[in-house]
Each structure stands twice: as C-alpha cells, then as structure tokens.
Amino acid sequence: MTVRSRSHGDRITDAIARKPSGLLGKLLFRYPFAHLTGFELALKLAPTSASDVVLDVGCGGGVFLREALRTGCTATGLDHSPDMLATAASVNAAAIREERLTLAEGDAGALPFQEASFDKVFCLNAFFFFSEPAAAIAEMARVTRAGGSVAILTTAKQWASDANWLVRPLVRRMRCHEPETLSGWAAEAGLRTIRIEPVPKSGYLQIFEKAKHPAARRPEAICPV
View 1: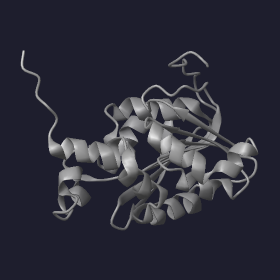
View 2 (view 1 turned 60 degrees about the horizontal axis):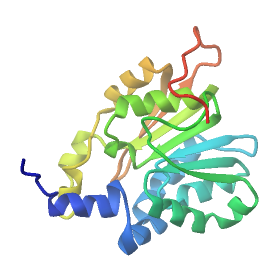
View 3 (view 1 turned 45 degrees about the vertical axis):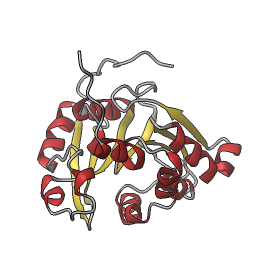
View 4 (view 1 turned 90 degrees about the horizontal axis):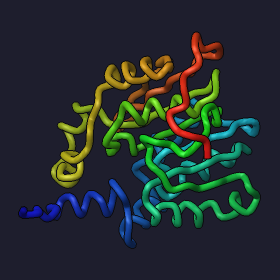
C-alpha cells in the first residue's frame, strides 16, 4: 500500500495553526495580535470574575488566559500542542505559582474533566480545526455548571470565502460553520444561544447558556479524572 505524504500546505497549517510548534508557532501565539479583538469581545460579553472557575479549550499560547486571570478568576487551559502549553506556562508563570492556573494536554472531543466543573468555558479561534465539532460542543456543555456559559469564536463560510491569498491555504483546511449549525449542536447538548456577534476580520462570537435547572441529568461522557 502506498502511503501519501502530507502536503506542504498541511505541514505549514499544522505548524502555525492546527497544532502550533516550533519558533514560528510560539511567536504567533505568544503575540496573537489578530486575536486580541476577539479576546476583548469575549470578556466583554461573557465577563469573568473572582468567583469564576474558567476553562479555555484550545488555549494556545495562553494570552486569553492571561487577560481572564486579571479579573481574579481561577482557570484551566487545555490544548493538544505541547509547545503551546509550554508557551502558556511561560506567559502565565505567576498564576501557576499562585495555583490559580492549571494547564492540561488533551482533546476537545473528550475533555478530561468532571461534569459541571466550570462556570465559564471559552473556545476562541480553535473550534474550526476540531475534527468532531458537535462532540466538542457536547463536551463543553457537559463540563459547564448549570447557569454557566460557553463562548465560541469561530469562522463562518462567508468570511472564509473572502480570505485573501495569503491565508487561503490555511482557510481551506478549516471547518467553517454557520451560527445556525452551532446553535443546533448546542441545543442538542443542552445549551441555549443567547448572543451572536461579528468579530472584524475573524468571524463571529457565539455565547451559549446552560439552563440553571436542567429538565434531566445528562450522563457523563467520560470518567472523572
């Protein structure tokens, strides 16, 4: 059997976006200037406070975590890239020493956390690379406490089709979903869409809420760790 090697475009996409690694990946996610507008909007629409326990799914270099931690919350960052977790640890070294931040390597489709562990869950500029997006939303819902929120910043097909030639090879490897699709997956997972906001040159931010009094208890998808 002939095994096809990955294309140059796939290797570049992995190195700088899907599973960032190497010096370029570290620099891009330690200084993610293109993502800062979305980070600011996420904290405006789903603000964190000192009483919140926060999860950042696909935390990258930890810059969003740094901004959230300034509000006094405690947090966990999850990523599947060891290089990104190392960068996030460097960016947030003080919070780790203070035991306000924990970092974990893992898969968004099988989060290694107990049910109802977090008040607020964020997934910013990572969702479009998840191979099982519906399962990822279900997992985010599972680990969110009743009355908590899930915020996802991702890209719609229209924005992807308008992308310039420089980023088009990367965009072709993204899974771009319309807000209605995310709302459907969220509803199946027990979440209600409460807000959708465009993010300039990025996509849209969608905020979901988990009911305070669920009609029925959802079974845990994985065993507690």
